[in-house]
Image (cartoon, rainbow, N blue to C red; front, top):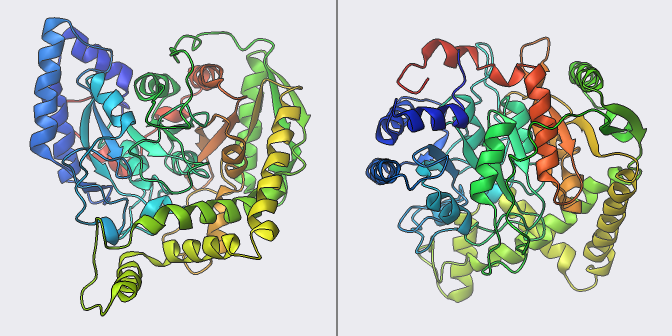
Length: 494
């Protein structure tokens, strides 16, 4: 089956072989007929109207490469007049009065929003089993077992993998773009911290959250990032740097590229099939003229404990705003203000969110701040320093995205630590604020996708995408679709 890329759709629209309305209606039909539970909400009339506007823009010549292309949006981004739930009961009936800057940027390029994708509640999870609106099914699920799509951007990943959308937005706090991309055979990019505005993106951990694209190819990811990124005065952490064309380096040769392999990423706990696939990928890079050497990230084992102090601490602060007073759910039958707070938050938050709020509140409490939160921040600096030292010896760091392929739904919900270990390779990148990508690297013996993890120095997204794109010119893993989807999907967008 032919994978539908943004680049192909852009060419179709440019030639006049299809209209935005036709493409949008085709995808909306696929969404309606899907059983993956990848979407929380879809506004058919709004999407079609955006498509009509895009078609008019193309007719007048006032358009970008992505004008008229439909894209799915993770339900963590506010869109004015649209239900925005963040996968939580507490925001089930919340209609946003404004639009996130990332979405505004995309709309200014003429991109059509298809709908809001399912996600782990408040982006807390690695399997998309924590959503109030139900679990998402991985399109790569087999007849004998239902697999998770990864999280928290599992709805976006499933939607793109199943070709319910050609691309989608995601957010990445500790791996929430890259891990589901690996589980669903996609290209997922976490940009440098500050590259994409966080304004209008419901906060989980403010010093770690970052928006990014989920696509089939690195070229598509570059096109998406062109539309998403940019300085925003409404976000105090937004980077005021010159606007960049992330497609500009895609065709550069990798001759002489220095690739670092951290020995810490290839030890105990890594699935043997995935290790073999990463080794094969390294050989492909060597054929292209890259130089491979071992590097050290000696403090990477501290990333997981550091993250699970910092992220819950910031979450406990950010989520204190959801109290039943200003917006969202308000419990009934309360006796006083404190009782309303307790009942609203007890009824409105799921178990994983409550768990992280409590951990965070404890870490920030009097007498424990220095022992936990302050210490975790010091460890974060050590981890960042490790990357700086490694990049003195190499241009990019390579490894597996996840220690295992997608796992069976329900198999890890009773063991939070086992679930957290899914992000062992991705979390260090968020702590250091670096750009990173997961790209398809092949399939295990049981036929499940594996992700290749690429990490670049700060603000070197163009170089990162160049490396990913060149790998995709000599491999075709990214063009593989789930068998069930390949057998059933039909329509005009091919």
